[in-house]
Image (cartoon, rainbow, N blue to C red; front, side, top):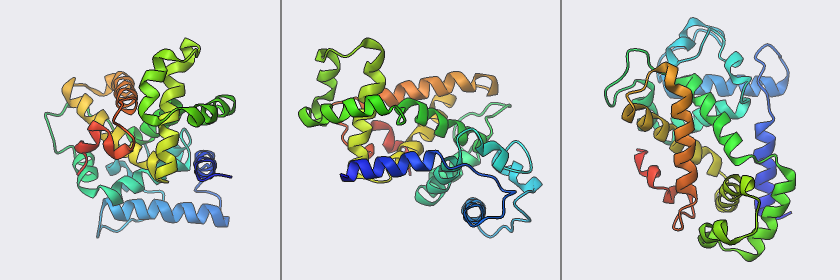
Length: 240
């Protein structure tokens, strides 16, 4: 198994791990520790009173038990938030506290927005499409990532598969170079979403529209000729 395939297998496994705070088994205990780690990274020095607590609402969860909000995207959405908090702590805190730009009276809830971003990226990359993954391997055998934009307009691929197929192809190449490509893309996506939110003077009821425009921006940047890594995406510069 090549490195890219192994990393793809691990990533797909991460996407299938669910979170249930009520189960006491070993795996769930590890996930609970990750939840505590997220709290510590988000609010250093502030004691968490319990995995089920009113305190979680401060972070933008819908209720006292954040695990109920993970059910849509699974444990990977918690991992994404924790990666963001640890890797780009300044950007994470700015978004959490809504410290940039003119904000709406009814803002998006930070943590729940993060879960939605994870789910959006999973849909955009469609990494469980096994049949199309097989096609992508053949693309990689003959096409360098730089040429993917040109292939997009020259290969006889059905129209409905073009955007998703080639975005996925670019991402798989990035994943082969960096095992944290998905998590980095998540961080970029969160920054793009917040920028789009501010640019549109959006309110909570427009969140889905903002998420759609965020996805379109990510796809556009991933298909740029000179973007070979997540770090090459223009919007990566939004992170600090």
